[in-house]
Image 1 (spheres, rainbow, N blue to C red):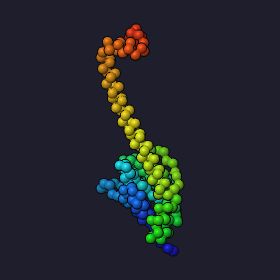
Image 2: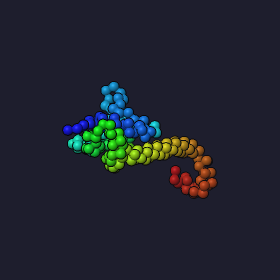
Image 3: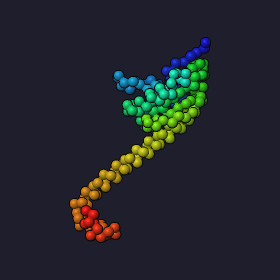
Image 4: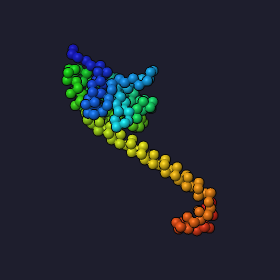
Length: 189
């Protein structure tokens, strides 16, 4: 029987494939003493991304790798995670051809930004990176929106506090804005 690669080898080659495509990725990175480590830790546009991989011939490969990827986000190890299921044939590819084969193989993967919502896709490393970019854009957009909402809420709280302390200002604003009469304002308060 020919070569049969362990998952660690495949994860190392996947990290190299990501690296060749401009993503800073390290296999089996030790984050802190005593903490478990992701199969691959990548940094994409400033966000930490944990990658967990299993070969399809592993019992319950999808469920196992998805649970591992979810735990990386839940533990705060990464901002997002990718669960990857390698095709079984990739274990027996000659090592010298493994980077090329893995780089173009159709992998089953799920990019997790929300650990409770996993969607599986099929594609090469390039498709994984495209999905990762989309997830990054969603996270960044959501963060920017949340920061804007937080700032607006603080500002509104300050304005409302100032207005509540000044009945005369409220009366003038009501009149200026044409939203009611002084009598309506007193009834509402």
